[in-house]
Length: 283
Image (cartoon, rainbow, N blue to C red):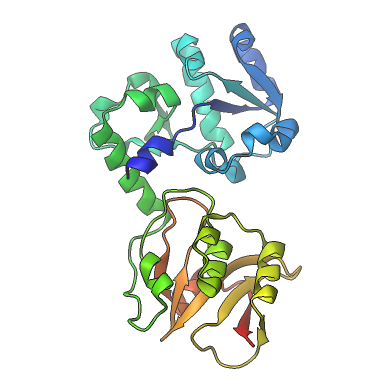
């Protein structure tokens, strides 16, 4: 939890805006960088996995044309009206780190300037400086509640005869962003712990299966198999490792809030059933 609290909010404040929004903040832009969105996505400084996950790049609206990149003190120099405007725009752009006020144990602990109301709900727009100034207990409680919005903590006991490396990580969280379903599955078949910390993409995953001597099977599942869910273009959307008795070692996403946990096949099918299921087995 201490690692979550430390790393949840990146040091750089990012604000995603449409072209028409820039003029609202003209008098403040001299103290920030205005980065075209397409350039932003290609920029190595902004590709760090923690920034990707905290700001939830995948949720950003297609209307975003620029990113205001600012020092964490920049937001404090805006007028109250300008600050409310840019926070409301962030909500509409789909930016991450905007949490319901209800997740915080004490609303009085949140500076009023960082609370907005959208669709009758009060929301907290988290920025680096305000996060640093919150009491640790408030941050911890908020992240505990927030993490369960990503993935429930309901899980099943790992089988006693599962491999030791699976039992070590079953039903735990990571402190490092990036590990996803594909790295978790490759870890399960190789027992290489360092792979568990990687952000693996689908072509790399298929090479991993091949190098571990796994091939497609049409037989009934058995312990040690890998199950994948792919679309019509053979792009993999999910993978999981079968430990037996309809149970899988699984990770549903790339954030620290997605645990390595033991779940049942029907739970996987509920989430990924729209895709074609292919099973791989070690030769």
